[in-house]
Length: 206
Image (cartoon, rainbow, N blue to C red; front, top):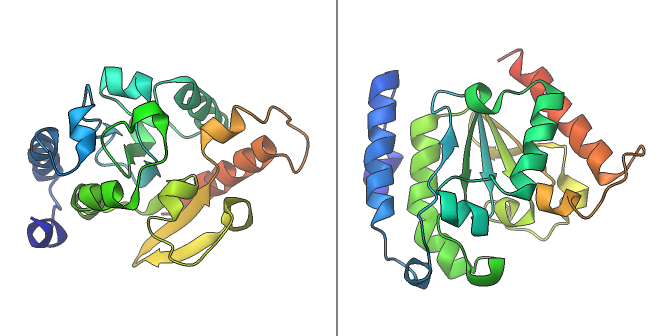
């Protein structure tokens, strides 16, 4: 499956949507790791498959597991607020997925083995969507692609050279911002707002 996904070339919008549906169907039946034993839903993606922005989060939580859609709980609602303030339309401008498609028990961080089991689906999504911008939402998503040690507070907001021809930025995960309410200059929420404004500005010239 890996070779097939990596060689996908979907220029036609309808072909792209159909290919994603096929990948989602395969993913919905996946039993490559033990998360398949405890999930309610496979949470594949949400948003516009023709969007220029792709946001990659960590893993589904309880609300996402119940609904089958990523970022619909409290953290997702906060993300929506930041997107709206930045002038980014969640339904039109962005395609959202996670590094793993099934909820880890008690919302723990997914293991490397679990992330590897889902790797082909994530790479397939990137290959099909062909976004112009990728947002790595939180440390777990970022360390799926960055090998060296880092702190999310140090790399967030910077354009990273990870994917060929795709502008990539790490941003705070909204679940972290739920614990940090300050809007003062330099606070995590203030930085998140500035980062998404930067993304919106980059999007306008792509």
